[in-house]
Image (cartoon, rainbow, N blue to C red; front, side, top):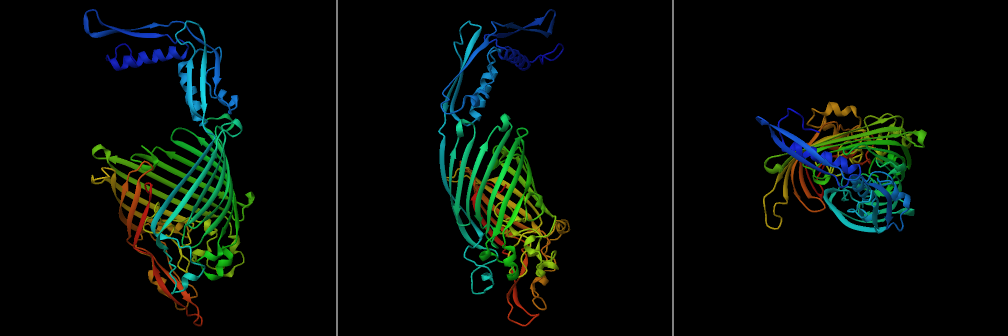
Length: 566
């Protein structure tokens, strides 16, 4: 009871107390209970009210039997675990609704009806009816999509071909469209349990992926635990430097701590390789860095998500993702390292009808290497350049940290930020990454056909990828590339020299058009300080002279896709 003697008189408080008392009786089997509020002025004092709650209990009703129908393929034990009412217990109306909610959450039934048999009768023991209609066990979906951007990786450039001045292979990629189709098959109610088997296939210009997943919701009968076992193959070109292939298997356990927080524990083992014909790095490193490498170990992910109204187009709330993966030879891995990747985003709505949104996203990632790269063991080309030559980092190329693209630093093409190979000028990633983005999302003009569904965006992105995580901190105050003139020196060297430790800044504008599947997004960016990089394309002269030129990343970039940047 919230209403107490001496408190200010409030009809809202009294109404809440009445509902609380009535709820108590209904949850204890008094389905005919009534609660009436009576109030009168105190004798001789017009400022004081006397209040009373008159309760008519009626007969207490108990559960006789729980009768379940309609579960043709589903095992009875699966349904019974979700029923909150048991025989001989008080007939709890709240538990009746909770039972219906639990059964819908199984995703096995298209319709769930719960009721009390003969609800108006005077019997003290009544049957509870649970009527089910099973959903279709097979589900097939397919889709088509595409992305358009200025830095689309080229698929027709073989290794070292980009060094030929007569070819059209570019370090920054090329403006283009990358289409893809997807196909999914899901079988629910596997063997009569709340388990499912699904297969997913994506085929596109830049990616070919096939995966199979066996899902076990409510693992060990815990409603906040889900388990999954998956495996698959992928052939992806998400950077202009190389195409990578992965054969992977994983086990995952998802724990929902509360409405906002989720923990994911997983163990992953994969075989990673780089297509030798696509690798755009120093010629003497191609046979080494294209060797297959086994990577395996445990990982943990923390998710905190309060974004509203939806993650696809949030206007308020916080999103935090902290991922850690530990690869070690104890788990059968060929390379030892620990990778941590943290992203934090915030959203603030203000203005008339909260139509203005200020959004921020910050990403910080680092890799701690715990040994050498087995691909480079015994290679003299990297023995003295583990710090200065980005291609000699002691982590396989596909496992490194990258930045750049439509959902990252928009001043670069996809994964095009950071260190570059000192012979070819192609990006090769690093052991550290820091990217911060600010967006001001504003309502657009009301136009015919689009009405008020248009949104205008102004943004600023800054950051980079780095050879070492320690390079991040000293780069915060660097707006210009340090010693950029060294990128243009080709006398007395066998490879170029260049320093990529600085923060690159990009400003831009974009538009969003709201659709039922998420906003369509187009962004135009201008990189204020793109990096220079050396390209050595002729070793025909006697040592120590080589021919080359200094390339530079593009100032302008363009992206078109679905969904907000973050």
